[in-house]
Length: 169
Image (cartoon, one colour):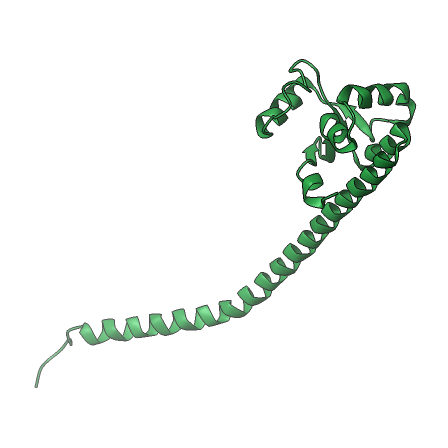
C-alpha cells in the first residue's frame, strides 16, 4: 500500500493525528458500517486515547476542509469515529483478516514516518534558529561598522558644506 495514499488520510483532531472510520474502512476493504460494528462489539479495547467520536462542530470543520467524496457512505448526521495510531493497530485484531493486518502495518508505518518528519523538521528549525542567532550577531558588528563609516562620511560632508565663520584675508 502506498504511503502517500495513507498520509493524505491522516488528519489532526484535538491535537492528535487520526484517521476516520470511513477512510479506514476503504483501506481495509470493508463497509464503514461493518468496521463500526466490529468496534462496538469490542469497545473495551478502544479507550478514548485509541478512538473517539467527533463532535458535530469538529465534523463540520473537518468536512469543510476535506473534499468529501463519501456522500453515500457517510450521512451528514452520522458523526465519524477517529482512530489514533494505537486504535488503528487494534482494528487489525478486531477485523482479523490478512488484509486488515497488512493494512494496519502500512498505516502504522505512515504514522511513524509522519512522526519522524515532524522530529526532523523540529530539529532542522532549531538548527536554523541557532544559525540565524549566531550569524546575526556576527553581522551586527559589520552593520555597526558600515553605519559608523556612513555616519562619518555624512558628518564630513556636512562640515565641508558649511560656510567658514570669521574674517577673510
